[in-house]
Length: 524
Ligand SMILES: [Ca+2]
Image (tube, rainbow, N blue to C red; front, side):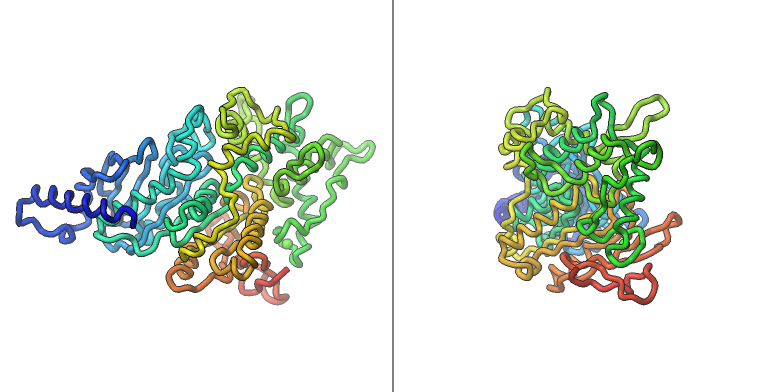
């Protein structure tokens, strides 16, 4: 409400302009239809904000007709806001963005998509986070651009939230009753950052696979994986040809540890797969790994360490995520012209070290030269701007905020161990599990890859907005959420409960193992 007075002034001025356009007998603002109220928004004067375009977009499918507003907050935080012209549900929904963002995107799917809220008649918004890039994995925008780094780090999301609420107030005549944020990956970091830095922006936040320790994940951990898998000839030590072999061996060893052999590892921390069991015996050349490959694989699972053996980032790649390594960690298979698509995490790590890792940019830096003894500390300056690692969420809790976090146990990009460690750090700070779960609940998703990209090996389609609404608006905290797995013909092939961490889904012993009803959420 800090901007309440300035909004009033803007509103009065704005209504005067509208009234003068229609003559002194003009109807009151609220008597215009939502369609009619759209085009005057282009004349809005909001602090530090430029409106670029407004238009009415016809309804299509399950998306209602909406007033589309584009613009930017100074210096260059672009946004898009969609205001349902009729039947607004009186609430606001903001969608996050992935990677380095760099575009005003509307990705289809659960998170990082405005339409998820729009089809429920929310007023919705999203942002490019302050810069344009050629892709989500492009970090060149940050070269000598501190303001853009700050806007990507935290300011962009906050500023677009402010402007969206002001435009909602002007367009509908009232502020939203409730505001929600949802995002995955970098979007999960955005959500957590909001809870830490701007705890009054949102009443409810969904933070998926949060890349909250950006410098640790993309810098230290990313460089570790790249160095671990680079042979003396510069080629990858582990490539696509070994992934199926490794995955099969892991699942053979660990699938049943949760009580059900179903192609899902409920918690990879209980997996006691012995990497050395894959080492080629004398004379064996197929169905096994070379010594170099075994060493690289151990580094993958073990995670980043300094020269004294101290763990620098919580855990490595989770066991059970192997089939997703191609896209995120190892890179594509050679194409028809010999080119190899780089792994997505590699792209982020390369540009991070050049443009967002250090106080002074270092275009000559490379993950291959990352020094695990000295470089992690050198990222401290940017850590303050980019990371959402602070475990003190007390201001968010006191403001009445509710946070639902989710994370795939088979995510090779934003690995799950840091997420679990963050949750524990909040528990330790708040003073216990129960006090934490009054406002912050974590759902671990067995078999889920990174933000459902690609689909995981287990049920990983779920709706967290409905339980978050119930928690914020009715005070009903979520206890379990049903996840579905969809087959090739879009039919649901099985369902499972997602449980409130640290509880895990356990088969009751009777009935179909494809039906969530036959699983209980219990402490491990
Ligand atoms: Ca299993």
